[in-house]
Length: 129
Image (cartoon, rainbow, N blue to C red; front, side, top):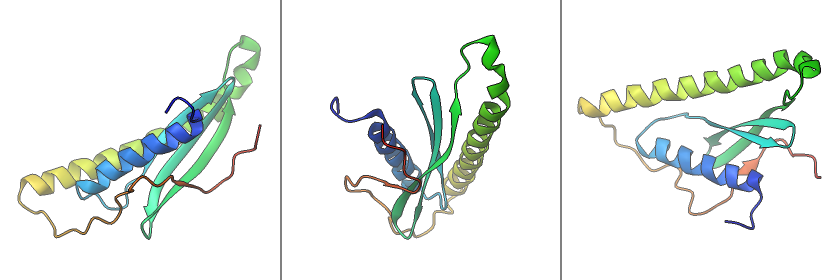
């Protein structure tokens, strides 16, 4: 995967995480990713709808390198809190599913989305550089 951009690598990793979560029976799961390119911090979420992966850019923020850039902190903090909340909701859904599975409440489940190597769809297009 050396010749693939970091953005595509992130999408593939997110797809693999989502496949794993869906395979244990969690419905409506979302995963997240953070991509740092230079001074830009981009956050993404991925879920599935009708068996199609959806990768959505949540936000794009400036990294803080100097004291004079501290004014960027509120936006960056808000974006990272959004990612934290998505991760927390997914973690709770995983715990609930694992508890149900351990109590023998496994549901009959069709594998709704095993990616078969497809690349996720990007909802909000990144500006080309």
